[in-house]
Image 1 (cartoon, rainbow, N blue to C red):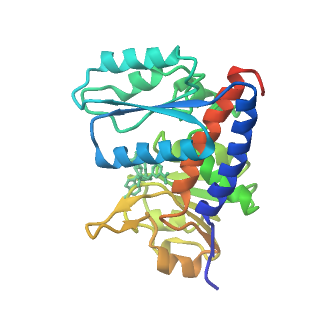
Image 2 (cartoon, protein in one colour; image 1 turned 135 degrees about the horizontal axis):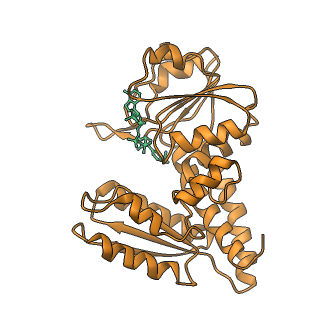
Length: 285
Ligand code: NAP
Protein backbone atom coordinates (compact mmCIF):
# COMPACT_ATOMS: atom_id res chain seq x y z
CA UNK A 1 0.00 0.00 0.00
CA UNK A 2 1.40 3.45 -0.87
CA UNK A 3 2.35 5.76 1.99
CA UNK A 4 -0.19 8.19 3.38
CA UNK A 5 0.70 11.75 2.51
CA UNK A 6 1.32 14.18 5.33
CA UNK A 7 -0.16 17.31 3.81
CA UNK A 8 1.84 20.24 5.18
CA UNK A 9 -0.02 22.73 3.03
CA UNK A 10 -3.39 21.71 4.47
CA UNK A 11 -2.16 21.73 8.09
CA UNK A 12 -0.53 25.11 7.50
CA UNK A 13 -3.82 26.54 6.15
CA UNK A 14 -5.67 25.33 9.23
CA UNK A 15 -3.04 26.80 11.59
CA UNK A 16 -3.07 30.10 9.68
CA UNK A 17 -6.79 30.44 10.38
CA UNK A 18 -6.23 29.85 14.10
CA UNK A 19 -3.36 32.36 14.19
CA UNK A 20 -5.44 34.91 12.29
CA UNK A 21 -8.22 34.64 14.88
CA UNK A 22 -5.77 35.16 17.74
CA UNK A 23 -4.20 38.13 15.95
CA UNK A 24 -7.69 39.65 15.59
CA UNK A 25 -8.27 39.23 19.33
CA UNK A 26 -4.98 40.95 20.11
CA UNK A 27 -5.73 43.74 17.66
CA UNK A 28 -9.04 44.31 19.44
CA UNK A 29 -6.93 45.05 22.52
CA UNK A 30 -4.85 47.54 20.54
CA UNK A 31 -1.87 45.26 19.87
CA UNK A 32 -0.79 44.21 16.40
CA UNK A 33 2.07 41.68 16.25
CA UNK A 34 4.94 42.87 14.04
CA UNK A 35 7.75 41.06 12.25
CA UNK A 36 10.89 42.67 10.80
CA UNK A 37 12.71 40.71 8.11
CA UNK A 38 16.36 41.61 7.53
CA UNK A 39 17.89 40.59 4.23
CA UNK A 40 21.52 41.31 3.37
CA UNK A 41 22.41 41.03 -0.32
CA UNK A 42 20.28 39.66 -3.13
CA UNK A 43 20.50 35.87 -2.91
CA UNK A 44 17.55 34.91 -5.15
CA UNK A 45 16.28 32.12 -2.85
CA UNK A 46 16.46 34.44 0.18
CA UNK A 47 14.55 37.15 -1.68
CA UNK A 48 11.77 34.63 -2.44
CA UNK A 49 11.72 33.30 1.16
CA UNK A 50 11.38 36.81 2.62
CA UNK A 51 8.66 37.74 0.11
CA UNK A 52 6.76 34.57 0.97
CA UNK A 53 7.05 35.15 4.73
CA UNK A 54 5.72 38.71 4.34
CA UNK A 55 2.84 37.43 2.21
CA UNK A 56 1.82 35.04 5.00
CA UNK A 57 2.14 37.91 7.53
CA UNK A 58 -0.46 39.76 5.45
CA UNK A 59 -2.71 36.68 5.38
CA UNK A 60 -2.76 36.33 9.17
CA UNK A 61 -2.85 40.06 9.95
CA UNK A 62 0.72 40.43 11.26
CA UNK A 63 2.41 43.75 10.46
CA UNK A 64 5.67 43.20 8.56
CA UNK A 65 8.54 45.31 7.37
CA UNK A 66 11.57 44.44 5.28
CA UNK A 67 15.07 45.83 5.76
CA UNK A 68 17.12 45.10 2.70
CA UNK A 69 20.80 45.94 2.97
CA UNK A 70 23.48 45.78 0.27
CA UNK A 71 25.64 42.63 0.06
CA UNK A 72 28.77 44.54 1.19
CA UNK A 73 27.12 45.79 4.42
CA UNK A 74 29.50 45.88 7.39
CA UNK A 75 28.74 43.71 10.41
CA UNK A 76 28.58 46.71 12.76
CA UNK A 77 25.99 48.41 10.55
CA UNK A 78 23.85 45.27 10.56
CA UNK A 79 24.13 44.98 14.34
CA UNK A 80 23.23 48.66 14.67
CA UNK A 81 20.02 47.98 12.68
CA UNK A 82 19.21 44.97 14.87
CA UNK A 83 19.66 47.06 18.02
CA UNK A 84 17.21 49.62 16.71
CA UNK A 85 14.69 46.85 15.95
CA UNK A 86 15.27 45.39 19.43
CA UNK A 87 13.97 48.63 20.93
CA UNK A 88 11.19 49.22 18.40
CA UNK A 89 7.86 48.53 20.15
CA UNK A 90 6.07 47.84 16.82
CA UNK A 91 8.30 44.84 16.27
CA UNK A 92 7.82 41.56 18.17
CA UNK A 93 9.91 39.32 15.96
CA UNK A 94 13.20 39.82 14.11
CA UNK A 95 14.06 37.47 11.31
CA UNK A 96 17.62 37.51 9.98
CA UNK A 97 17.43 35.75 6.62
CA UNK A 98 20.34 33.32 6.31
CA UNK A 99 22.85 32.84 4.78
CA UNK A 100 24.67 36.11 5.47
CA UNK A 101 27.54 37.34 3.29
CA UNK A 102 31.04 36.08 4.14
CA UNK A 103 32.30 39.29 5.80
CA UNK A 104 29.61 38.94 8.47
CA UNK A 105 29.89 36.59 11.45
CA UNK A 106 26.41 35.02 11.60
CA UNK A 107 26.80 33.94 15.25
CA UNK A 108 27.57 37.51 16.37
CA UNK A 109 24.58 38.81 14.44
CA UNK A 110 22.16 36.20 15.79
CA UNK A 111 23.44 36.93 19.31
CA UNK A 112 22.57 40.60 18.80
CA UNK A 113 18.86 39.84 18.35
CA UNK A 114 16.94 40.35 21.58
CA UNK A 115 16.11 36.91 23.00
CA UNK A 116 12.53 38.17 23.46
CA UNK A 117 12.22 38.86 19.70
CA UNK A 118 14.21 35.84 18.50
CA UNK A 119 11.28 34.22 16.68
CA UNK A 120 13.63 31.95 14.71
CA UNK A 121 14.85 30.48 18.01
CA UNK A 122 18.51 30.77 17.05
CA UNK A 123 19.83 32.92 19.93
CA UNK A 124 22.07 30.91 22.33
CA UNK A 125 19.64 31.69 25.17
CA UNK A 126 16.76 30.12 23.26
CA UNK A 127 18.90 27.17 22.16
CA UNK A 128 19.84 26.68 25.82
CA UNK A 129 16.21 26.79 26.91
CA UNK A 130 15.32 24.29 24.20
CA UNK A 131 18.16 22.01 25.32
CA UNK A 132 16.83 22.08 28.88
CA UNK A 133 13.35 21.17 27.65
CA UNK A 134 11.79 24.55 28.54
CA UNK A 135 11.81 26.33 25.18
CA UNK A 136 10.69 29.93 24.72
CA UNK A 137 10.92 30.02 20.91
CA UNK A 138 11.46 26.78 19.00
CA UNK A 139 13.22 27.04 15.60
CA UNK A 140 10.47 27.10 12.98
CA UNK A 141 11.29 24.10 10.79
CA UNK A 142 11.71 21.59 13.65
CA UNK A 143 8.58 23.01 15.31
CA UNK A 144 6.75 22.50 12.02
CA UNK A 145 7.86 18.86 11.82
CA UNK A 146 6.54 18.13 15.32
CA UNK A 147 3.25 19.91 14.53
CA UNK A 148 2.81 17.72 11.44
CA UNK A 149 3.38 14.51 13.38
CA UNK A 150 0.94 15.67 16.06
CA UNK A 151 -1.72 16.66 13.54
CA UNK A 152 -1.78 13.11 12.16
CA UNK A 153 -1.45 11.65 15.68
CA UNK A 154 1.71 9.83 14.67
CA UNK A 155 3.34 8.27 17.72
CA UNK A 156 6.68 9.74 18.77
CA UNK A 157 7.13 8.29 22.25
CA UNK A 158 9.21 5.12 22.27
CA UNK A 159 9.90 5.32 18.53
CA UNK A 160 13.37 5.16 17.04
CA UNK A 161 13.97 8.45 15.17
CA UNK A 162 16.84 8.84 12.73
CA UNK A 163 17.68 12.37 11.56
CA UNK A 164 20.06 12.92 8.66
CA UNK A 165 21.66 16.36 9.15
CA UNK A 166 22.91 18.12 12.29
CA UNK A 167 22.58 21.82 11.45
CA UNK A 168 21.69 24.39 14.12
CA UNK A 169 18.68 25.31 12.00
CA UNK A 170 17.10 21.88 11.56
CA UNK A 171 18.74 18.58 12.57
CA UNK A 172 20.13 19.53 15.98
CA UNK A 173 17.04 21.26 17.42
CA UNK A 174 14.76 18.60 15.94
CA UNK A 175 16.78 15.90 17.69
CA UNK A 176 16.15 17.71 21.01
CA UNK A 177 12.42 18.10 20.36
CA UNK A 178 12.02 14.44 19.47
CA UNK A 179 14.08 13.43 22.51
CA UNK A 180 11.89 15.59 24.78
CA UNK A 181 8.93 13.71 23.32
CA UNK A 182 10.59 10.43 24.36
CA UNK A 183 11.81 9.12 21.01
CA UNK A 184 15.19 7.41 20.85
CA UNK A 185 17.40 9.51 18.60
CA UNK A 186 20.19 8.88 16.14
CA UNK A 187 21.65 11.88 14.28
CA UNK A 188 23.56 11.18 11.06
CA UNK A 189 25.93 13.55 9.25
CA UNK A 190 28.50 13.56 6.49
CA UNK A 191 30.87 11.27 8.42
CA UNK A 192 28.32 8.65 9.46
CA UNK A 193 29.37 5.17 8.38
CA UNK A 194 26.88 2.69 6.90
CA UNK A 195 24.30 5.45 6.69
CA UNK A 196 21.80 3.27 4.80
CA UNK A 197 21.77 0.69 7.60
CA UNK A 198 21.38 3.42 10.23
CA UNK A 199 18.48 5.04 8.34
CA UNK A 200 16.75 1.66 8.02
CA UNK A 201 16.49 1.52 11.82
CA UNK A 202 14.26 4.59 11.89
CA UNK A 203 10.57 4.25 12.68
CA UNK A 204 10.70 7.98 11.96
CA UNK A 205 13.27 9.07 9.37
CA UNK A 206 13.94 12.78 8.82
CA UNK A 207 16.05 13.91 5.87
CA UNK A 208 17.56 17.38 6.40
CA UNK A 209 20.77 17.46 4.45
CA UNK A 210 20.23 19.35 1.18
CA UNK A 211 21.13 16.48 -1.18
CA UNK A 212 18.49 15.82 -3.85
CA UNK A 213 16.86 12.39 -3.65
CA UNK A 214 19.63 11.05 -1.40
CA UNK A 215 17.29 8.84 0.64
CA UNK A 216 16.41 5.84 -1.51
CA UNK A 217 13.85 3.10 -0.83
CA UNK A 218 16.65 0.73 0.31
CA UNK A 219 17.45 3.16 3.14
CA UNK A 220 13.90 3.17 4.51
CA UNK A 221 12.29 0.75 6.95
CA UNK A 222 9.01 -0.77 5.74
CA UNK A 223 6.15 1.39 7.05
CA UNK A 224 8.39 4.18 8.39
CA UNK A 225 7.32 7.80 8.77
CA UNK A 226 9.48 9.75 6.32
CA UNK A 227 9.81 13.50 6.77
CA UNK A 228 11.58 15.32 3.96
CA UNK A 229 12.94 18.71 5.02
CA UNK A 230 15.21 19.16 1.99
CA UNK A 231 14.52 21.77 -0.67
CA UNK A 232 16.69 21.38 -3.76
CA UNK A 233 16.28 22.96 -7.16
CA UNK A 234 17.44 20.69 -10.01
CA UNK A 235 18.97 22.09 -13.20
CA UNK A 236 15.64 21.43 -14.88
CA UNK A 237 14.08 23.91 -12.44
CA UNK A 238 12.17 21.16 -10.62
CA UNK A 239 11.97 21.42 -6.83
CA UNK A 240 12.79 18.14 -5.06
CA UNK A 241 13.48 17.03 -1.51
CA UNK A 242 16.25 14.90 -0.04
CA UNK A 243 14.04 11.82 -0.44
CA UNK A 244 13.53 9.91 -3.68
CA UNK A 245 9.76 10.35 -3.36
CA UNK A 246 8.25 7.83 -5.82
CA UNK A 247 10.06 4.64 -4.74
CA UNK A 248 10.18 5.64 -1.06
CA UNK A 249 6.44 6.34 -0.98
CA UNK A 250 5.82 2.72 -2.00
CA UNK A 251 7.67 1.49 1.09
CA UNK A 252 7.00 4.13 3.78
CA UNK A 253 3.85 4.28 5.91
CA UNK A 254 3.73 8.08 5.89
CA UNK A 255 5.59 10.64 3.81
CA UNK A 256 5.79 14.41 3.31
CA UNK A 257 5.88 15.73 -0.25
CA UNK A 258 8.18 18.47 -1.60
CA UNK A 259 6.81 21.01 -2.25
CA UNK A 260 3.77 21.11 0.04
CA UNK A 261 5.28 19.36 3.06
CA UNK A 262 7.57 20.90 5.64
CA UNK A 263 8.05 24.20 3.76
CA UNK A 264 4.59 25.72 4.43
CA UNK A 265 4.80 24.59 8.07
CA UNK A 266 8.06 26.50 8.61
CA UNK A 267 6.47 29.80 7.60
CA UNK A 268 3.40 29.20 9.77
CA UNK A 269 5.59 28.45 12.80
CA UNK A 270 7.31 31.80 12.26
CA UNK A 271 3.86 33.43 12.45
CA UNK A 272 3.07 31.39 15.56
CA UNK A 273 6.30 32.49 17.27
CA UNK A 274 5.70 36.14 16.36
CA UNK A 275 2.19 35.93 17.80
CA UNK A 276 3.56 34.31 20.99
CA UNK A 277 6.15 37.07 21.28
CA UNK A 278 3.46 39.75 20.94
CA UNK A 279 1.32 37.99 23.56
CA UNK A 280 4.29 37.79 25.94
CA UNK A 281 5.03 41.48 25.42
CA UNK A 282 1.56 42.39 26.70
CA UNK A 283 1.51 39.49 29.20
CA UNK A 284 -1.45 37.71 27.58
CA UNK A 285 0.25 34.32 28.11
P1 NAP B 1 23.14 22.49 6.26
O1 NAP B 1 23.37 23.52 7.29
O2 NAP B 1 23.93 22.52 5.00
O3 NAP B 1 23.36 21.07 6.97
C1 NAP B 1 23.32 19.90 6.21
C2 NAP B 1 23.57 18.71 7.12
O4 NAP B 1 23.49 17.53 6.32
C3 NAP B 1 24.94 18.72 7.80
O5 NAP B 1 24.82 18.30 9.14
C4 NAP B 1 25.73 17.71 6.97
O6 NAP B 1 26.71 17.00 7.70
C5 NAP B 1 24.65 16.76 6.53
N1 NAP B 1 25.03 16.10 5.29
C6 NAP B 1 25.40 16.68 4.12
N2 NAP B 1 25.73 15.74 3.21
C7 NAP B 1 25.55 14.55 3.82
C8 NAP B 1 25.73 13.20 3.40
N3 NAP B 1 26.12 12.90 2.17
N4 NAP B 1 25.46 12.22 4.28
C9 NAP B 1 25.03 12.52 5.54
N5 NAP B 1 24.85 13.78 5.98
C10 NAP B 1 25.12 14.77 5.14
O7 NAP B 1 21.63 22.46 5.81
P2 NAP B 1 20.27 22.88 6.58
O8 NAP B 1 20.20 24.33 6.73
O9 NAP B 1 20.07 22.03 7.77
O10 NAP B 1 19.21 22.46 5.46
C11 NAP B 1 19.08 21.12 5.03
C12 NAP B 1 18.09 21.06 3.89
O11 NAP B 1 16.83 21.48 4.40
C13 NAP B 1 18.37 22.00 2.72
O12 NAP B 1 17.90 21.39 1.52
C14 NAP B 1 17.56 23.22 3.02
O13 NAP B 1 17.21 23.94 1.84
C15 NAP B 1 16.34 22.58 3.61
N6 NAP B 1 15.59 23.44 4.53
C16 NAP B 1 14.25 23.41 4.37
C17 NAP B 1 13.45 24.13 5.19
C18 NAP B 1 11.98 24.05 5.02
O14 NAP B 1 11.27 24.91 5.48
N7 NAP B 1 11.48 22.99 4.39
C19 NAP B 1 14.00 24.94 6.20
C20 NAP B 1 15.40 24.92 6.37
C21 NAP B 1 16.17 24.14 5.52
P3 NAP B 1 27.99 17.71 8.38
O15 NAP B 1 27.47 18.38 9.60
O16 NAP B 1 28.91 16.57 8.68
O17 NAP B 1 28.53 18.67 7.37
